[in-house]
Image 1: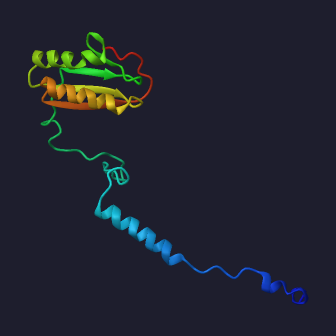
Image 2 (image 1 turned 180 degrees about the horizontal axis):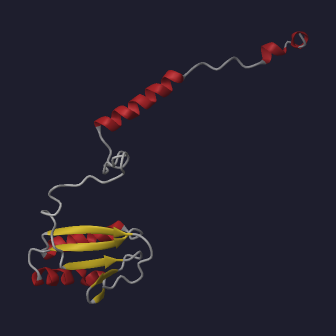
Image 3 (image 1 turned 90 degrees about the vertical axis):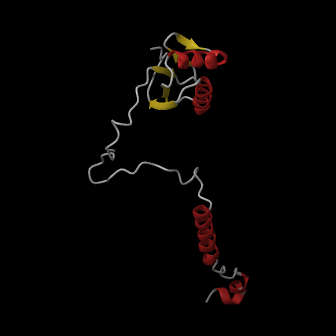
Length: 151
């Protein structure tokens, strides 16, 4: 053979050792930690859809549990909050919600948000609504250009 006179075979690197068990152990530990400490950011909850007919499951109490939402606010993609009277500046939002809650006591607030809007806007609205006296808050998401969602 050609490599024997130059002894090139001895200069080659040895075959790497097999570390497949470490990769399997690492994957097993990751799965164990996710099952023990369930992360809601990685293993997020969702609504199961039946693959046979691709229909959402229907609740028999859906109509019974439905609530009227006489007061609603809309949030566009920029995070601006719009009510029935127009644009509501963020500093005035808690006062506006308190007035609306007194106008319709025990009512549910409907928040219609653009899917591109930041979620901290919804958090601020829901905190202000609970402090203002609303019993419940419902969130509706819509996609696409919403413009100035003034009702």
